Amino acid sequence: MDKNKIKEGVRLILEGIGEDVNREGLRETPDRIARMYEEIMAGMLQTAEEPLSKQFRAENNEMIAEKDIVFYSMCEHHMLPFCGKAHIAYIPDGSVVGISKIVRAVEVYAKRLQLQEQLTAQIADAFVEYLHPRGVMVIVEAEHLCMTMRGVKKPGAKTISYVTRGVFEKNPELQNAFFRMVHN
Image (cartoon, rainbow, N blue to C red; front, side, top):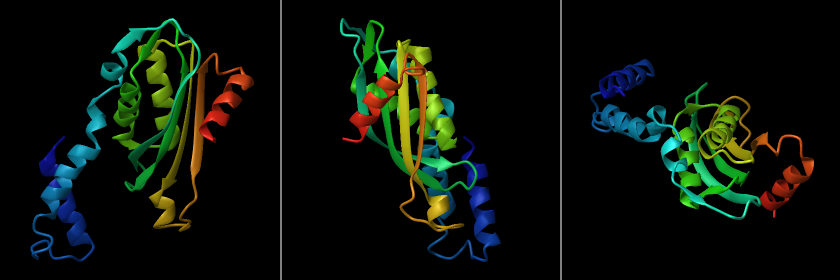
């Protein structure tokens, strides 16, 4: 990440909206924003391989679900935040991961310029690639500030996306079991 380019870009935006980049309240803003982007875009150079590679053998190959994983991401169209919850279910094929690793996998993909639909698929595909479960299903529900603060201005509207892989793909019974878990 090039912090100097970010700082210069912020200065240009401030000047573009008519602000004085030398006034007291804004003098350090370009540096603060550069540090913020370093943090909130940390997933740009990561994959979920590291968290999902810490696996444990498991005899139980029934559905495992982790729900209400809070995440924050940035819309790639408007560079405004969207935030919400991710819910993940997978059916192991002899290996499981610790629950904190599931959360870390979500964070890797949320900390990028993103589309919600893409985020949902990236999480599911990472499970398939690194954990090799019999199946995985990911549901993401989020509020997008690009719809809340601007444009149609509809606070509270949520977008819901879901992706199925493996045994979840053609099994409505499994899908419905997970939907019930998430909504209870």
